[in-house]
Length: 391
Image 1: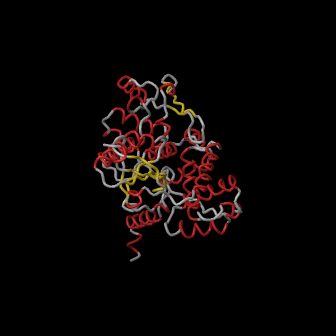
Image 2 (image 1 turned 180 degrees about the vertical axis):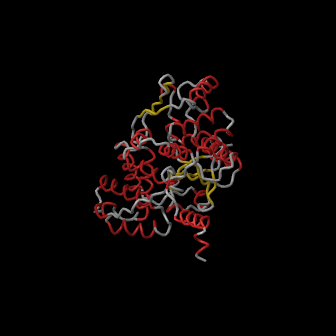
Image 3 (image 1 turned 60 degrees about the vertical axis):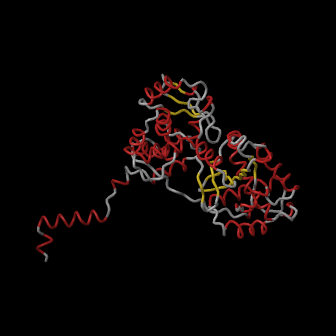
């Protein structure tokens, strides 16, 4: 197939279900659909009328590699996340002037220079780009508080952006003001109160059920590491052979969230499992590797975890991070001091770890419900005849 006759797959980054996703737009093509579903475990959003995959490092480059000779992969940023089919076929892009595109490009470089993670850089860039497009015809140095408020009222509220996305937008605007020198009084920018969600937690029995039904050795090792060490998915993917110290039963997490290293205890039961895994797969470099010893895909982990939960007949919405939440909660229920749990999880603030006190059941189960107390007192009266003698 000639290059100029290949179909086009356009992508854009935007927040969806509390995390950054890569939305994919293309005219129906069975080959493209098969690749994005089997390789990237893409899901279809009826709301956005598009396929989407989880945003990750080098994901676009991987997408281009997998679709080479099948489709042309190009970026398309659309107004307020709405894209019509005609826009894709005509190759239209976001309605931003060349001058403002240069500003956004420089803003991205500015954020990268401040050493923000690529995920944070792209989130801030996309949020600011929405505002820039909305006020595209005006000089950006004239942006002020009323203009920002107008955008929030006309876009964020009607399209029901989450509170956390709204907070990210305010943080992004502060960075943009610092970079470009607008007329925005950043001290007056309203920051909504952060939404606090209680984490989903599995019981110990449910965790064991998931591990039991996971037959694949590599998959079982990954899930066991996530739970037994309380690791984030990125921390598991970045583990190298050198990070495992079997003799000392320790695992070192390098460059975790906030670019912090930390040591984590390696469970005794992980030692034979890891030995079996290393003997079978003989990793060289990354402990958990994908094709050609490259870094393993986070989408793959999420996919086989869903399958394991289905086999284990678990109805809760379980993600790899659920295993980390379960690890912390089970430690707390076992009587481990909150300060140690904070250290093991790599939390910068104790307030972050405190959320697990709301889901730990050890102390909660010691509290008697008024209904239980009332029924117990009633039963005592009836056995002693006191209740009946008053009738």
